[in-house]
Image (cartoon, rainbow, N blue to C red; front, side):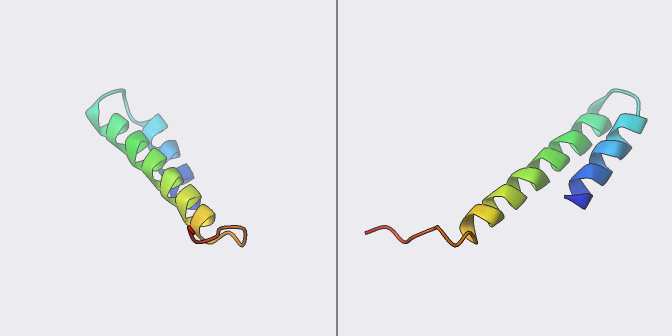
Length: 49
């Protein structure tokens, strides 16, 4: 979460453009990866039958 927040903060300091867009995209990817990781490691997750 810290990495995603850091990327967002840095992106908002930059002028609008491809670099800022790429940083925001990377922040979203980081957040998604964290959510998937939490889901996969949740105790309620069960193997398919």
